[in-house]
Image 1 (cartoon, rainbow, N blue to C red):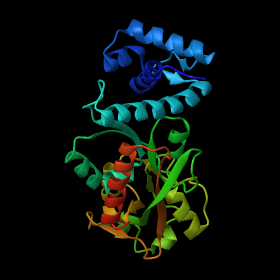
Image 2 (image 1 turned 180 degrees about the vertical axis):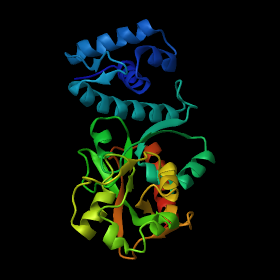
Image 3 (image 1 turned 30 degrees about the horizontal axis):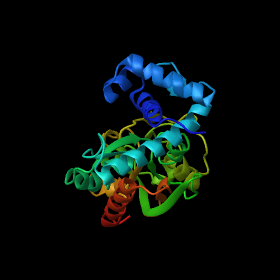
Length: 294
């Protein structure tokens, strides 16, 4: 089944903008034209591809077409740039990348600096959990992800970036309030700070040390921002797991035990199709990971 390039481009714009009106602005056409293109694409596909919700969301068949659309549109724009033709001839290539919050707060800074020195790539970064980012690839929402998953999504290639080490830490004040008890003696019951409900690290460490698998009766704080998360631990709200790269900038926090760490492997997973934009971004990513000592 062959699809019209403009219609695929419109589907991509609708999903990224979250609405037909937003897609119209991004594409420089009327909302009516967006609607007409979407109706034509859905007629061609023989099914509804997007739910007219707020924001617009792809249906199950829409996810499949969206993934195809993202690849075709990316390749089409690269071809126009390479040939020096069309409206994209002088346009930087846009890539949509999924990355976890802790990477964004630490070693990814060098990626941003390198992107700032060049004007051939436009990055649309989607923050997500490193354990779930591969799902963004499956849904066609991104072109590549930083993920903990070594198993490639169908049609994708994987490279190992390195490993982020996390340590169980707490503030001086928080430790002092434990009345001189060793961390092993209070870890099971002391207040804890967790990034969000998808964050497994605190539970993994606590389970390993104490055998406790639930947080029943424990004061559990959730702070879903990497630096505000560290601030919460500094403020004495509880203990938590922080990346070693971040701890280097937080000398006032203390490791609870030299054996209480967890290593989280990170991988760069992207479409396996040829893409100069993704190739270029991948090199920037690998260089930054190596420089950070992952």
